[in-house]
Amino acid sequence: MARIFWMAVGAGAAVWAMKKANGAVQKLTPDSLSGTAARGALHLGDLAKQFAQDVRAGMAEREEQLKDDLGLHGTAVVEPRSELRGARRVLRGEPQYRAISAAPGSPAAALPPARGSRTAPQAIEETPRRALPPRGGTPNRKDH
Image 1 (cartoon, rainbow, N blue to C red):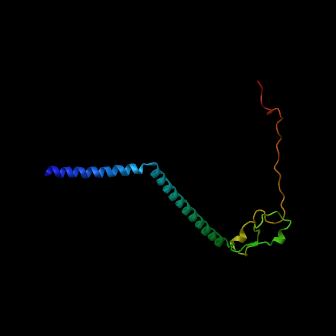
Image 2: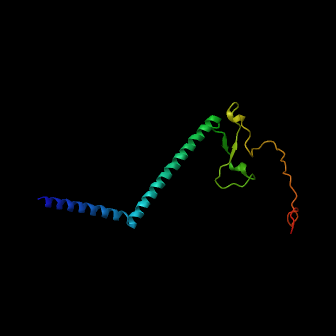
Image 3: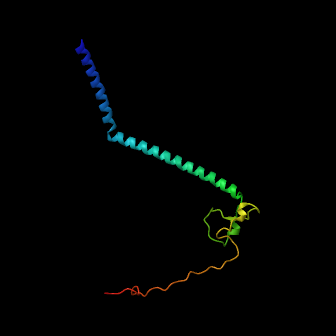
């Protein structure tokens, strides 16, 4: 009776080991490996997309905070196209903005004027130029 019991236990262990071995072989086939890699790449892409959405939401939130802190809500006006003729060439559909003065006492009123804003012309200092060496090479070079 004991021999029959141990023979059944051995047969069960063999069946279990064969199932495990076949599962491991199936996981290591090229189709299975490529499927696993594809699923991993899709998951990574989803994570990157979620990260980008979180960054955009954070940027929009921070921009609103800065606008509130500086009192800049509604300080840009879209100019009509008839006023733009002769100014500079713009792309079709590109909005043109011009700044209007900030309310007195707001933090934006204390800021310096924006670069390129239309203020009184300022003198531009030209950078001094240095003399170029002669074409034969540098003047201090000794030929041996």
